[in-house]
Structure formats: structure tokens, C-alpha cells
Image: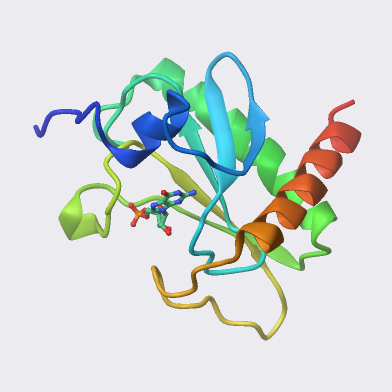
Amino acid sequence: MSVYDRDNIFAKILRGEIPCHKVHEDEHSFAFLDIMPRALGHTLVIPKVPARNILDVSPQALCQTILTVQRVSQAAKAAFAADGITLSQFSEQAGGQVVFHLHFHVLPRFDGVALLPAHTNVESNETLAQKAAKLRAALAEIHA
Ligand code: 5GP
């Protein structure tokens, strides 16, 4: 089993060493926008504990994280008037994982609109800030 790298980019985001467009934070989980969105409102949900991927995360941390995945999915569908949501999670390089801190992709989907290819569409800070504000508002409304 590969070890957890404490200097991966999401660990740095969790420590506040790298900025992000945060949409949610609680004791156990954290959610922020993907800087190269494959869909409008593409959000990443991660546990706060160090976990490389689905293969080494504790059952408890996984459960806490998936609850946030559900909340973010519900809020994203409302915020962006999406028709559906796609979730994805990649584990290890062969599984398509690039950043080695467990994360779930929450991808709002629209009828007839394909996902963009991964790691191609670099979004502007301004647009990301706008989308994050919308998603935070929807989270606050849904879970008030
Ligand atoms: P995966 O490891 O599941 O293949 O994907 C990692 C995801 O992290 C990609 O969708 C990529 O766009 C995103 N990503 C990579 N670096 C950063 C970063 O510095 N900030 C944010 N917010 N997302 C990132």
C-alpha cells in the first residue's frame, strides 16, 4: 500500500497554505471548487483526516465525507439548476487519480451536455468565486 504524502496539494489546501474557493467546512470534511472544472459547479469533497484514497480511508471518515458529498450534490443541483449529478472518485494512478488525498468529484449535469475532458478547462478566479458564492448560498438554504 502506498503511503500518504502530507505535501499533496489538497493537504496544503486543508492547512491553508494554498488558496481555494471553499464552499463547505465542518469538523470532518471540506469542499471546494475544482480549478479545472469538467462541468459548471464541479466541486471536490475531501475528508480532513489524511487518507490517500478509497483504499485506505477509515470507514468512519468515509461515512462523514459521503454525507457532505450528498449535501453538496443536493445544493449544487439547486444552485445551478442542474438536471442531475455525476459523482466520481479515482483511486491510484491506474484508477485515474492525480491528487493523492481522497476526494469525490461532484459534477452537476445538464441534459445533452457532455463532461469536458479532465485537466483542460482552467477556470478564472472570478467565475470560480461567483460559483462558490452560489453554492454556499444554496447549502445554507437547504440545510438551514
Ligand atoms: P483526480 O485526482 O481525481 O484525477 O483529480 C484531481 C482534481 O483536482 C482534478 O479535477 C484537478 O482539476 C483538481 N485540482 C488539481 N490541482 C488543484 C488545485 O490546486 N486546486 C483545486 N481546487 N483543484 C485542483
